[in-house]
Image 1 (cartoon, helix red, strand yellow):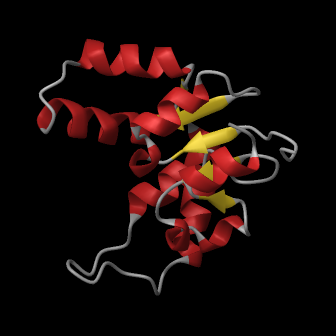
Image 2 (cartoon, rainbow, N blue to C red):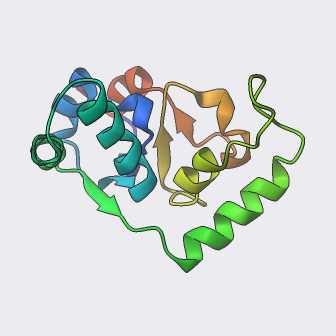
Length: 140
């Protein structure tokens, strides 16, 4: 039996074909941040030679809402960045601001962040799962 279905916020790396198909029938809300939308467009247009219109169509097909990044999200992201001051990218030694901006759309329960990079979001206190775990936990 599936657990209670919380609102889901998808990270860019979670947007694979299986999850997108599964999300078509998922209720309640499912969304991505405007930062995730930007990253997904860069990937799909720049790497997969898709158009922005095709990206929009893929997201509409899955019923995904794009959340704008506003003042409240900026404040949460700043707080997350302060909490992560010791965590830096091994390649470039920079703080991972985009993950903080993405997760700022899910600062408290019940929203769950879906990502392949669970370990990158320790400040979300256990509300982070992989796409495979989301589909298994909340029903196929």
